[in-house]
Length: 261
Image (cartoon, rainbow, N blue to C red; front, side):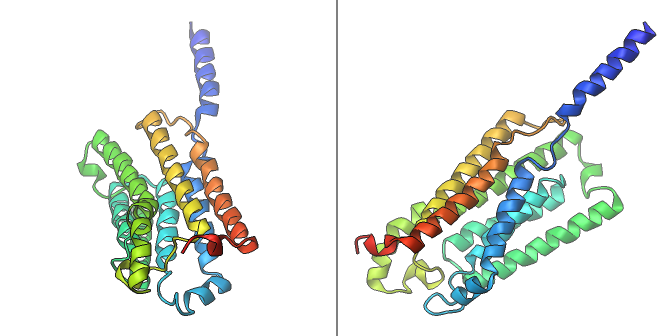
């Protein structure tokens, strides 16, 4: 009987090995790669020149806020703490505000980065102390609920990069340009109706968030630590690749010039 129990225990351990979480292939690392690639692109010298050259001077720093939010959302996947994820939601809330053109994009980006720094400080403190704030006062299920739903809210807010573009900016941009190059949200955002890469990336980003939500619905709280599906990880490369292909098409064709006035 004892021998059978030992064999069963060894069998269970062997069975659990492939079920352990895959740290490098999952939504966290996918968002890290996407956010970091996005950020590096917009801090390159050629991007800085574009950002600081009229007529787009000061109107294209929204990409700094978007990329930093995506990057921190990826890091936050690996630190399940209610306080840190509340701060993450605050950071992600800046995304739709920035995307709407309601504020100066440089100011929004700096606020976004400041919140990201606050998130990093909280994580360092919690990991140094080896316990997360609030968790001692909350039930385990409450902590799980907060961690999961705060992450879902973050993904939805990130999707608003694209949602605001398609619902608000696309229908209004032509009318605003007829008034002035600085009318409405164009005072803080550049016109992007004729930018193919913006359309393609925003469509791909919505697709990624849909995949993330589907995978989260499928996995639930995942208390057993089962490996996460890989679709959201690979979709980050779809976003990157689609954006680069669209940029290449813009550079090699007359796409903007071919659109009707």
